[in-house]
Length: 140
Image (cartoon, rainbow, N blue to C red; front, side, top):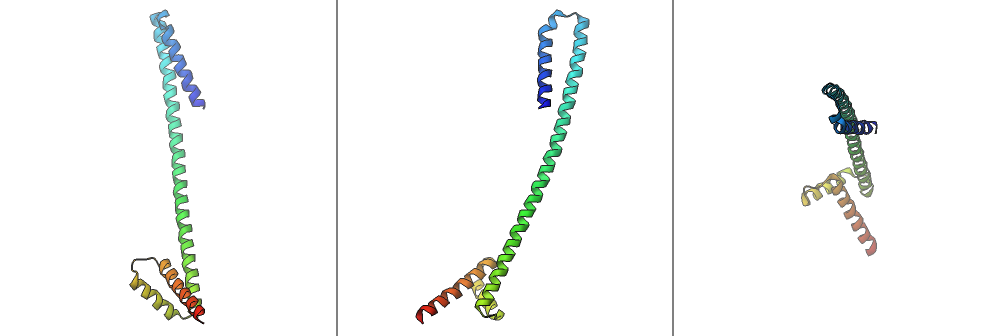
């Protein structure tokens, strides 16, 4: 805000100088041109300083966004790992703790449907077991 006021003041000053420039003698014109040059130099310096401050702020924001991105990716990875762990636990419960049977079922799914994620295979095997169990219960 202060920079905007300074720039506006500089522009107003320059405009007034141009309007009243014709009424001055050569010495006065040279003096005014020197003052104008100094004022413009100060404005340029202030603008450069603001630009540097803006760059520093922008860099800080970029770093925070980068850190936030990494945090989000880490959270997603942890959630996925938790999901896979829970699915494995459920699968083991459904096969009465028989790890070999669980591994074989997952391997058969991998052969039947290649290219899927570990989570997908676990969900598919659990679905198949639950579906088979519900069919057995309805037949009983």
